[in-house]
Image (cartoon, rainbow, N blue to C red; front, side, top):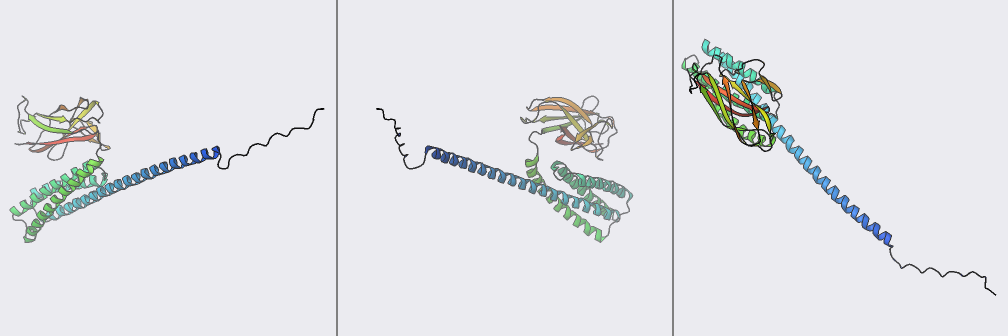
Amino acid sequence: MEDNRSVTPAATAPQPAGKTPGNSNNRVAIIVAAAVAAIFIGVAIYMWSRLRSTESEMAEMVEMMTYEKEQLENEYADVALEMEGFALKTDNDSILKMLDKEQQRVQLLLEELRTVKATNARRIAELKAELASVRKVLVYYVAQVDSLNTVNTRLTEENREVHQRYQEASQQVQNLSEVKTMLEEKVTIASQLEAQNIEVRIETERGYKTKSVRRAAVFEVSCTILKNITAQVGRKQLYLRVTAPDETVLQKSPDNMFMFDDREIAYSSVRDFEYAGEETTETIYYTIEETLWPGDYRFDLFVDGHLIGTATATLKK
């Protein structure tokens, strides 16, 4: 007779004591995730620190440039007051006329300085150079007044003081020029072109070289535009701006304007040239149709809205 009782299956063997394989894998995953998170946090902290450091350096740079601009404004204001004082101490019509012209020039430069951006290191440097020129003119006027015996003992003493201030100002300009060089190395765009070996040739109508103001017919300006592998290649325009001794720009038409430092300024001549990133020599001409006068003429060259070089030439009687 068959036994109908159910057979109880054998009991499952007990698992060994300790962690299961699933728990071990989870722990490895957690450790790996924690390591990745730590690395990510470390990188984030490092990048944040570098960003803060860069922002701090830029803020200090802007603060230095702003301070430099404020000091230059004060110097221009001092020069304007000095000129007013000298105008009250002479009755020589010729000197008064020249002094009035310089006062107007100083006022225009001061107004421009107040509106120019503190980070515009190049234009501020040019205004510093203009200030040095004004101070030289001021010293000349003092000497003229003294030679005409139209000043008293007090004015003679002030003349020595002005000369001393001029020496101090020249030293300040030199110091600020060194600061400007340092700042320009940080803020100048790497792709900006630069011109060297700028030569100005003044020719007669027959092509002979001259320095006579009456015979001058053509200004020929040649330069070497240096190699710059970061600059954009292609067709470019080379602008020439000729400034007369009275600071007026020689210009064929009032429409001859181009953009420089976010504003339109006049140019004397322009020509296209091809730039391939390599060093190239370019020449630009200006045919003289105006009545010129003796003195120093400044020749500024511009490409891509940047001043790439400056030269001067003197016309004589």
